[in-house]
Amino acid sequence: MQTRGTAIFVPATGLSAIYAETSGTLILYDPRKSAPSWVPLARSLLRSSQLDRSDHNLLIVAQNLTNTRSDTLLTDPALINSVTNTFAIPQGYLIARIIDPVLLAKVKQSLEDYQVTKNNNLLKVKILNNQIQTYSSELSAQSNYLAGMLTLRSRQFVSESTILQQQATIANLKNQINTVRAQLLQNASDTDQKLTTLYSSVVEYVAKGMYFAETDGWLNTVLSQTYNYIPSGSQIAITSPFGLRNPDTIPVVFSNKDAATVRAGQKASLQLVTLDTISDNTRLVGKVSMMNTFPSDSDSLKAIVGSKPMADLLTSQYVSPTAGMIKLDRDRDGNYVTTIPDKTRLFKFVQPQDSFQVLVTTSYVRPIELVLPTLQRVLGLRPIPPKPEITPQPK
Image (cartoon, rainbow, N blue to C red):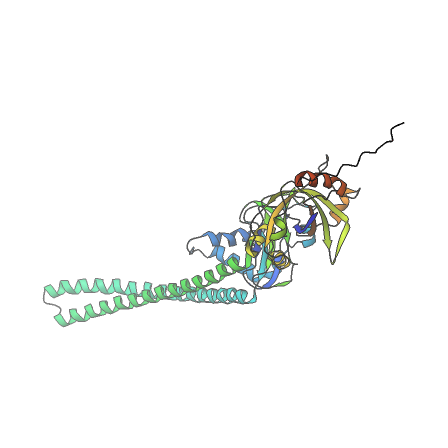
């Protein structure tokens, strides 16, 4: 007897899914090309605990974010998804970017506000510093004049009211200097505020719209096309710690009722599902290597198969879906054992995330003549012996 299930052509363990955290136009990057210098700067903003008052790196990132024409490292998803290709990605590699018009508008506006404020304040600072220099020179001269007046006052040559008037002049100069310095501080505060706003908008864009590899690994699958509109929550790609595009073990799902009859070591036949039909051209064979005894929810299946749409589909197809693993058979050359002579033909059909209809042989039905003696022995039944033939005695 056979039990039917669905297998997904991905490694059975280690998959990580990347989901969009915002909406917009998707840009996919070629892992064979080196990222431009501004990309590591963008990622460093996420790791910094506080704003660097030096705006050089921040301006570089902001200007490149607003210049979408600078994206020249685009990739072909079909190239990534082909099982004959492998693409190693280092930690920090920019897998994708989403051009969200709302986030982009924030960056553009805050960049413009900061640059205008900074340039205006630079002119103001120059004017205010000149004023401070003028007031300081005047203050020095008036202070020297007061010192001379105090000497004359000791000789009764200058009246007390004149001294007080001079002291008032000096106090007024000091107040003017303090007022100008306060204006300088306010200008610096205004510039810092605009810088903080720019920093916040850039970090928000980088955090929600740029997707980096968290660790060294491999880009397994991309699930959309460059320049496609992608809504928030949609899956962008799947990464894996393994470079295998032809995995030894793949996940399989049965209904919980059927899974109860499946055991490790049972033989499995896998037929590739193409469109609405099952292709007999690509059939793999293997054995069940592991079977869970408890059902999996959609989130658990998502972690197993690497794709939320596929997990949702399996959840809708099977009552209490239960996951397991199938180890695919290989020949001496390391190729999959298939039912077709040309084993390389397999790779003309299969891509990551493809599904297979699985038939697991759970028991064998014996012919009745082989089963009957066992039943008789178990039930304690014995066949009625034939009557002996009576042969006439010779007279």
